[in-house]
Length: 416
Image (cartoon, rainbow, N blue to C red; front, side, top):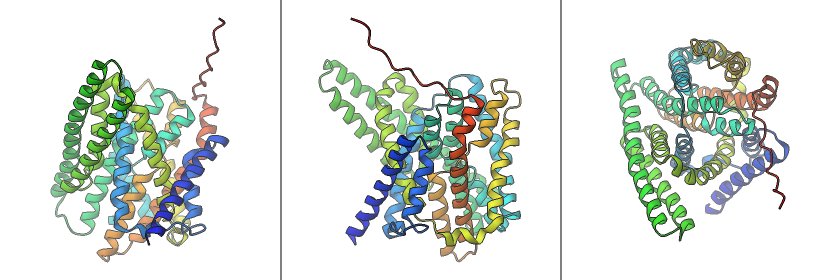
C-alpha cells in the first residue's frame, strides 16, 4: 500500500514538472499544461493517479501547501499608491455584492442547482486563485499595476470565498440558524484568521530581523546558513499558525496565511527580498504538484451530466465579469479601456477552489443531501473552462492590447 501511495506522489510530481518544462520550452501557459497533465494522469485520462487513495491525509497536506502559496502572495503584496488600493477595494466589494448573487442565479437557472447549493457555488466561484493568477501574471509580463491588482483580488477573495462557502454550506445542512448567526460566524473566522495571522507575522518578522542582525554582526560569515535557517523558521511558524488556526476556527487558516505574509513583507521590506525567492520557488513547487493531483480526481462522469446548461453557466460567468469590471472602474482614471478589457477576461479559478468543493461534496454526501456531485462537477467545469480558455487566449489578448512589458535586454560586458 505504501508503495502505491509513493507512486501517486511520484506521478503527480513528474506530471507537474513535465508540464512546467514543456511550458518553459514552448511558451505555452504553465497552468493550462499542469491541468492537462493532471487530467491525462487521472480518472479522465489514463487512470494512473488516484488521489482518493491518499485518504484523510491529503486534505491537511493540501491546506499546508496552499497556505504556503498564499503566504508567498501576501509577502509580495505591496500595494503602492492610493489609486491601486482603491481599485482593489472597489473590485472586491463589487464582486462580493453583485458577483455572488449573479453566479448563484446562473447556477440555478442554467445548471439546475437548487438555490441553497447555487449560493454555495456563487461563494466558491468568487475565488480567482493566486495559484493560477500569479504564474500567469509572471508569464504574461504584465505591468506591475495590473499584475498587483489581479493578484490582490485573488489573495483577498480566495480566503473570503472559502469561509463564506463553508458558512453557506452549514446553512444548507441546517447547522446554523438565522442570518445573524451566519454573519457572526463569518466575521469571527475571517477576523480571527486575520488577527492571528497578523500576530504570527509580527513575531516571525521580529525573529527574522534579529537573525539577520546576528548574521550581519558576524561579518557575513555563515550567511548561507542563516538564510537557510530563516527559511526553516518561516515554514515552521507558517505551518504551525495555519494548523492552529484550522483547529481553533475552521477555514481561518487561509486569511491568516495572507495576513502573516503581508505583515512580514511590510515590516522587513528590503530584507524580505532575501526570503522572497526561496519562498517563491517553494510555492511554485507546491503548485506544480497540487494542480495535477487535484485535477486527476476529476472524472467525465461528474462533468457530462451538466451538459450544455453547465457549460453555458460557466461561459455566462466569464462574460458577466465585464460589467462588474466596468462598475469597478467608475471614478478610477488610472484604469483605461485596454486595462479594463484585460481585467474583464482574466479570472481563472485554482487549487483552493478545487480543494474546497471536494471537501464540501464529501460533507453533502455524508449528510445525504442531494446535489453534492453536481456542485463538484460544476466547480471543476468552471476551473477547466476558465483555466483553459483564459490561459490560452490571455497571451494573445495581452499582445493585442499592447499591455506586455518589454523583456529586459541582456547586459553586455563592458570593454576592458
